[in-house]
Amino acid sequence: MKLLPFHKRQGLPLQWVLIVPFVLQIFGAVGLVGYLSLRHGQQAVNELADQLMARTSRSVDQHLTSYLSIPHKLGQTNAAAVQLGLLDVRDRLTAGQYFWQQMQAYDLTYLGVGLTTGEGVGAARYDGKTVTIEEWGA
Image (cartoon, rainbow, N blue to C red; front, side, top):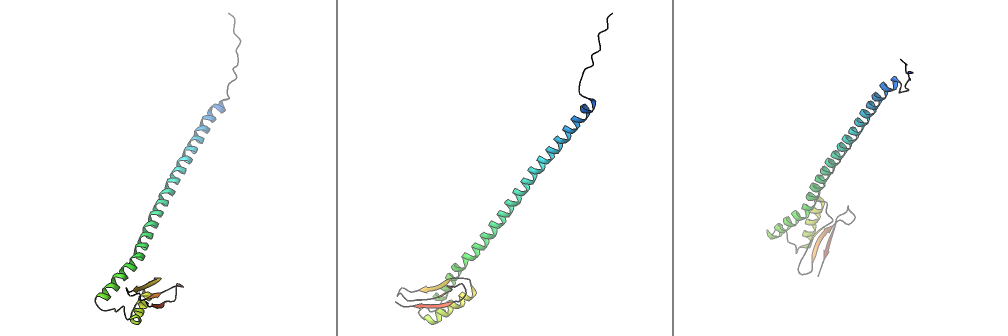
């Protein structure tokens, strides 16, 4: 019987066989956790941005609605004062003082009335601070 020569097979060292799979698992787990954290962080940032935009939009809508309702309310109030005889718009001195008082209470640029005769009176705030009374004739 002839013995076959024992061939020593060159393979990977046992250290590599044991260490490489663990290292690959660790890198895979770290990579997956990092990816999931990044996605979760992006979602959280997007949700916060959406909430901030919604809150800002609501706030702007409320302020704009409030601000734009002032001229309409003053118009109704002034029309009622004229109809009830509390304000005579033909008396330009009194009407001018009346509009001046309203301009002190509200942040408006101009408030006044014009008659079909071409006459009118109003109060204006052109520089953003000082209120002046304006009268004009036909």
